[in-house]
Image 1 (tube, rainbow, N blue to C red):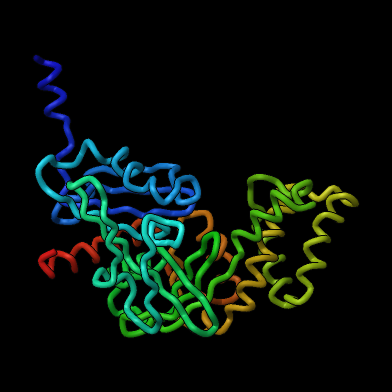
Image 2 (image 1 turned 30 degrees about the horizontal axis):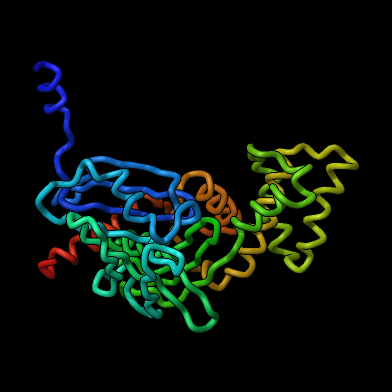
Length: 314
């Protein structure tokens, strides 16, 4: 009896809604109350790359099924790769310029469990140069919810980093860069894997590589091989090689994205490690970026979608 009472007293309250950020490699879920407060946070490795289109409902229920009420339907608001072509159901892209993260255009899967009402937020697309995003638009919506008067550029580092021009509450234009993916491929699957360390950061080596790449971006292919040559000839330390590789790749990205950040109010939306590298590189160029946590901005954006859903009586 005492054990049963203790378990009852520590049970989590039933959520009013569920927020979910479905990435390629990870899934983050928050159970939420009606005021937008987090009741519980759950992280899983069941990203889009690990499951099939028919596995989304069962994956979600495996994480939050016991938290759902028995006799009512709970809204689940998702962003990210759940709306990809290989996801739960394909969500549309809204063409910029437009506001980000609008629930009115959300895709609506038809789950078998009657307790779920699922909304997958739309991504954003750009006709020229051709570009798309899924998930980042919710971070942008979250940043604008926290900073409604912001007019400038958001930098969103990641596997595919984004530079986003925002004005009057809308995404005006954006560019994506495969910097994170290229770094992973070169450091793990190219000849540079023998020279580049798996962790660590040398600020001096990073800053020098950023400056070098920005001044000579056309030489990037040669500069990359020089990392291997220096390792063989001079015993270049693996942490220095890793920092130079990161600096070279971020340097050519900054060179190409210069029209976005030069002379602009810039905010970096990222977790600590990627955000630190981009902030370090931008500060060296005379920019003074603001910082915002990526997870918190994602949750802010999902809260904004929930607020909009409630306003429609949904």
